[in-house]
Length: 302
Image (cartoon, rainbow, N blue to C red; front, top):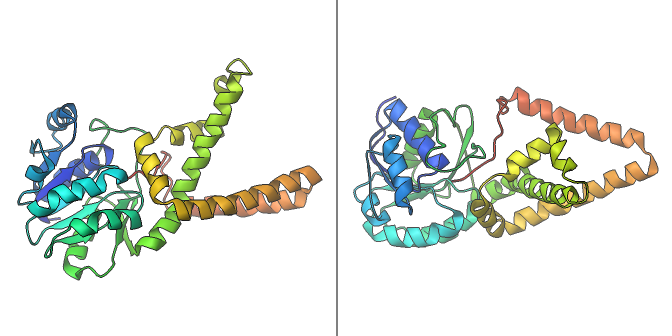
């Protein structure tokens, strides 16, 4: 695939941005990749790993003359960054992000985007429990979905950004922000909160059982701990910025959990068997769709 952007600016240089840089370089999708991060050490590692052609001390400097600007910072930092870079964006640039919630990001970023610049929110459904510039790898997005939000953006910039994600190995779907936030509350946000809760319960119990809960962790609990190892700042911001959808799904989860508790209490084996059969079929559908490569996917946004 040929070059899609002459200059790409990455604001934030963690797992997602680092993986994007490596994937773009591998595919020849960008002419120059410029980066900025709050930490000088992060920028130093990014240069050592070849993620960026150069790094800048400020986001304002990084976005100058960039054709594509990628906001790869926690959702809670989006508004401040957008306000800083807005006056320095070139008139025909495209701005996107990789956050795990979309309506809150639109509310935070859109007011700072000047006329002539196109803002296309995005979210790659890929990640690991690792973070930082040393954790990125070019194959992270292979056969994963990248979701783009279309709320009246011009077709050409949207198509070019979609081609970028496809060039990095992803499948692309387009949807509106509210639908995205509801879907992700089901598939990512609520499962993370449940994992955090279960690991917290185990930690409490480990103090009573001399650590045996941790020592004898079975596969199911190990999956919980991998999910719960995700970046705390990012997930704090996710829950605070997608609270309505997450609370709706958690309410439904509680209703289902009560039904299962009742079945166990009353010895309703038929109900349990039917329920587990239905959920097993969902798991098989995920595997058949190619969305389980054997590695955990944390739905990360940064």
